Amino acid sequence: MSCPPTETEALPSRFSIFDRIDEDWLNSQDLQMFPTWNAHPLYGQFGRRLYRELNHKSSRFMPSSFAILHDGIPQLLGFSTTGGTQLSFYDLPMLLAPRAAMAKKRGKSVYAECFRHLRELAQKSGASTARILGGTNDGPLTAPDLACLNQAAQPNAQINAIVDLTRDSADIRKDLRSSYRSLVNWGSRVLDMQYVNAANTDAALFEQYSAFHTRFAGGTAREKRYWDVFWSEIVNGTAELSLGFMEDGSLVSGTIVTDGMTTSYYTSGVYDREKFDKPLGHFPVFDSMMRAKERGMSTFDLGQIHAKGSEVSEKEHQIGFFKKGFTSDFQLRFIWTVTF
Image (cartoon, rainbow, N blue to C red):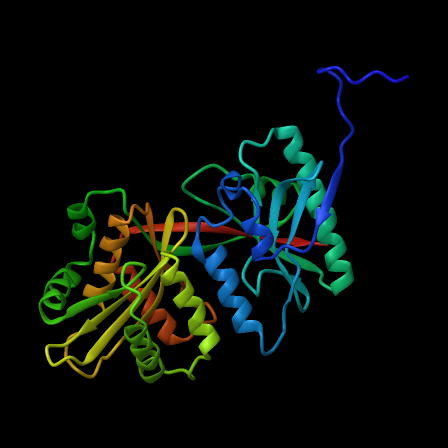
């Protein structure tokens, strides 16, 4: 008869892969144990829902999210898709979200299983690389960074304009580009702001924005299921729509901010540039920043800033210049490319 192992004896490692992650499965888990799974909305719950809807027609990407389990307990969540020559997350870098306070030895084994699974995914899908989201330059390398480093991955970085919302409001205002301060003051006088959020689920106001976006954003009209993602976030209390009206009641600005666990993200902004000789966007964006601060968020991410010479349009460069005027703080985020 065998004796049970003592506390000092190592139990055999029992790893397994759960490759059917969906929202129902996630909702059944204790996600507080995974502090990065929804820290940033673009790479978290909002991004998963939005890009899934954007992909539904072309079906260019196939969902391939997975969890690494040990004795049936999730240790790491991997949000990924297959499609083309690279594993990614709908063409964004995939997120690897480890369990909190994981011991170093356990973590090493978990990431070994993770990359073994990614290699199998790559072989089945014909991919030769994987693009993986890393940490930022304002802290030490994260566990996913170190795991990618151990895979001899190639690091790249993108730069985002951010605002530290833990600072005093007056300090945040002082950080605005000098010309922006007068535009913020002017906008606060001429715009009547209304808000659609969990406390005011006004569907008629929301529909005004979707029509306004189609008219002024310069793109094709989005399908209802696209806007349903934003509406769901608003109703759930993880997004807010700010609308700016003139005295005559005409809508001239619209801004959507989505919230993760710690970061608010400037997700959508449309402004009628025909009404005034001055730009209208400055007060709505600054107002959104202050409202995110009031909600207890710690960081406001204005979005990516593209370097000169990068393959983006002149309009995107101009948008980057606009965003840079709201802050002097910028964040580098590592993006790793693993070659199989």
